[in-house]
Every structure is written in structure tokens, then in C-alpha cells.
Length: 173
Figure 1 (cartoon, one colour):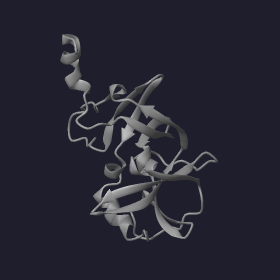
Figure 2: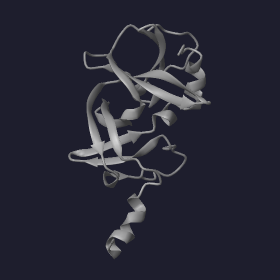
Figure 3: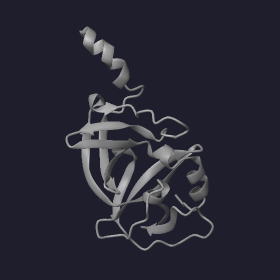
Figure 4: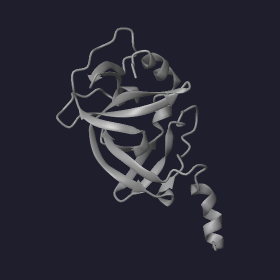
């Protein structure tokens, strides 16, 4: 049975969907992010990327991963961050993106992969309002962890319709 204090605060942090689960966490520009592990296909080291003309600047191109052509998006550039030279810790997280009635594999370049965390609903707050026309629909929530906050991403929305259209034809899955 919930107490009055629990009921009065539960409306703020009770998610509209169950966000509890395992998340692959990674670093971008010194901040920690997470993606639901069920969306992650694999993690590979940086490899040669073939540039594809007339794609958005954050679309780095495509890779050949065991005979499959995988479009690659630099998440730093997608988020409007400064570009960074790739290091030995830079890697590609291959994720499954759902949209337009189909699923495609897409790679996202991140600074480094951290760990897989099991995050409970009680540790996840809704995204705070930033006011104005700032779009934060791509954020599932904010995970309160020891030492800071991890931004949990809805990767289907991060790589939304525009990206799906731009790279969907590049993928041969």
C-alpha cells in the first residue's frame, strides 16, 4: 500500500511506458547515454567507411559488415556536437531501427562504449521541460545513477523519419 507521500510524488516519475530494462551505455563528448539493449545488434571497432555523395553531413557513409551494407551515422554530428578525431576507443554500435513498416540495421559512431546497466523504473525520471521549441521526444528519460545522470535515448526517434529516408535506400538487409 502506498503512503500519501508516495502517491503525491509518483505522478511525476511514473513513466507512461515501462522503461525499465538493460541499457548499453556509451560516451559522447564527456556525457553518458544509453540505448535499450534489445535495439543493439552488435558493437564493432571503427573501420573504413565508404562516403556516399549527397547524404546529410552526419551520415558518414556505409560499411560492409560480413556482406551486409550498413549505413553509418556519426552521433556527435547528428546531435550538433563538434566533430572529433576517431581514437582506438571510438566504435560503431549497430542498432536495429524501426520505421516505415520495416526494420533496418544502422551503425552509430560513439566516442566509447561504457557498460550494460540494468536500470529500474524508479531510477528513471521523465525528461525535464527545456521550454521553447526544443524537441526532446527522442529522449526516453533520465537515469539517475551514482555519479550523475545518463540520458536514455529512443534510437528509433534519434534516427527518425528523415534519417530512415536518407539511409534506408543505402541498406541492403
